[in-house]
Length: 411
Picture 1 (cartoon, rainbow, N blue to C red):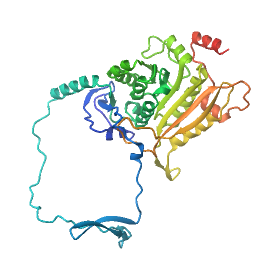
Picture 2 (picture 1 turned 45 degrees about the vertical axis):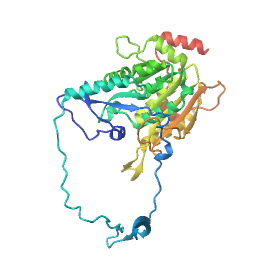
Picture 3 (picture 1 turned 60 degrees about the vertical axis):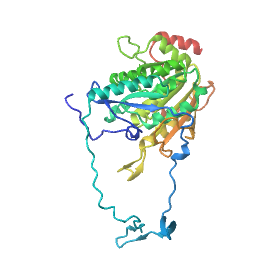
Picture 4 (picture 1 turned 180 degrees about the vertical axis):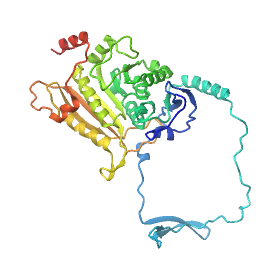
């Protein structure tokens, strides 16, 4: 790829725009020519945690504005009614300037470049900061891209992933010692956080370049993971396929022991901000359905997402079609009873503490929790034809040894 091009469908995550104190220093180009950056996410201490109430939007008055008024040397307040001008626009009375004593002759200050930046010096500073981060367990380093086409959005960090990380950090006892599967892990931020709490995390996604970036991020944060006694394994899991890749010649493939491990021990599935395309959302629910049917234990699934509002010509209004489709699939899954699993759905309030620095928008970011548990064969409800089209047949992953072992344990 000779040059980096930006098409009409290029997107940029708000996390990278609003990340405090971000240097955004490019470290390398990936295999497809996209610039790769490194960002640091600091886990806040107890005294630095944010209260979610601080991020609520304050209500403002529509017709009355309070402005300071200078009177007898003191600043008071007066009420100003906002009127309309001849064009129908708001005509707001503004406070007159109080400091007009003649500082208008100040020299204009312009920025001056003292010296040209030295790239070797910058790299030395970065290496020094990396060594300092290795000694501090509260710093997470993540490699990511800054702007990508829609098909590569997994290479960025999204607010849904940071929100889910906050939730995991707020419930350490729930995940202590657990085996967890993350679907659509992207850069691996949420898996890294989970690995500081759980026993083992299978960090899954598709695409060799994305999985290589994810593996690099796991390596960058090994000091935190090993210190907590956790483990992360980066593996390929394609939602559009009904089986796990166990070909030893393929990088990021599964071993027979790993397939047996998730079937016998996995009790949690997590996914962060993965519902932005209807076809992929359908594939996500098919994957969840198959995994839960094959797991030996009841499974709890946590999905975080951000409602993204768009104006559509079809509706001629602002709507969130991806979120609406997600809710539609979710309601169908909740009503499904097929003799193997039943599903309950619960929306969790985002009132847990904020451990990471980002803009938490309560009205846009929502976490759903739904649990899957074993069901007796006498269940009477059946899945609707529409849901069967979404979920497809319940297929056990095609590994003969694992399949026979699973069937024997289920009987």
